[in-house]
Amino acid sequence: MSDSEFHHIGVACRDLAAEQRAFEILGYRAEGPVYDDAGLGISCRFLTMPEASAPRIELVTPLARSAVLDPWLNQGVKLYHLAFFVTGLEQEIERLQAQRGKIIVPPTPAIAFGGKRVSFVMMPNLLLSELIER
Image 1 (tube, rainbow, N blue to C red):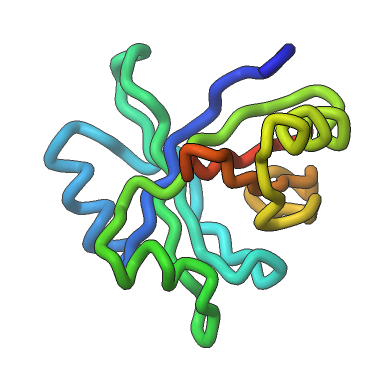
Image 2: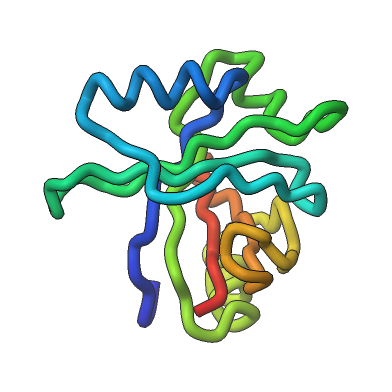
């Protein structure tokens, strides 16, 4: 991706607190509060590790009556997406679509990023990428 910066790995889970405890065994700690985002149908929390080389983790769980994570959770898939800050969100979406990427979530304001828009694009290799407006 042109002019992009890796931000986090999304991890799908049914119980955010239990998943956080599992990551704490590895040395991860909460980076901030839990965010409930009704627009995206999720609750999430970022975790980081003191070591700079460890990737930031975003624990993501569905809000009540949200089925947004069901395809992953029902198949036992935990690693949900890779997320990148991008400059020019629409242009990056168009670039990925030209490479056979499919928009799963169009640009939507995200609580966790102060209202900046995010979009999810499924790549041909079935890797879900979250694009975060810089």
